[in-house]
Length: 319
Image (cartoon, rainbow, N blue to C red; front, side):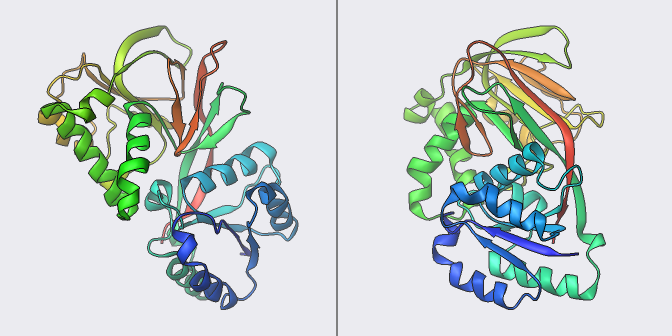
């Protein structure tokens, strides 16, 4: 399997670790390497890797870098209809996708571990498959690919994490967990954190069915198996590719139900009028405010609903 690596040196963790990564690159025979000193060069870099016959595409960056690469691969199709296997290194401030389906540890260590596995000829056992979201209807934006969509309090939580938690230099997963704990505590005990969570009116229609409108604390759609701090806030699925969860605003018993929401099984005893989760092939959404796709912020187009689906899947090296 011919390996190639596209690396974003501007991603947060890469700013201090590129020397170690590039030493690991030098020790990796046959690796095609593309360093993105200018991120707008991404399409050309991927074209070169595709032309070189790369079958295993390694991405060194955060969730935003991974999202951009998946969009190029699945929308512009430089590899045609047979995309490469993906290998994700933890090079960003937020690496939620890589935590679920990537190469654990620092980027240079993950790369060295992969080199050994390839040399042993034993990569198939490390492969896993995930569906990839396709998002249509963001304002002035072509269709995007990604793994995690969030609206209302999710958007607000990411802003809080970036402005108040990331400057503390806390590891990415712990930073997300600290933000979540602060928001839960803020809602229960009041204060500025509670004031920042305003809720949002969201209209949702699943699989071209009837729409329903209600005030939501948050709404998420994902194809990942685990989110921040190992949570699985989705249930009532029957094998559909897309997982959708929403919590009403104001939430009922948020602190009391939080562990069950985050870590329960496929059937959870929760107030059904407030805590809702299901699988779907697609969902159309009408939103009031901004939303996030893999940490990238977007505005909804007021002239049409957002459509989130999961028509394609990719293979990932989880090692």
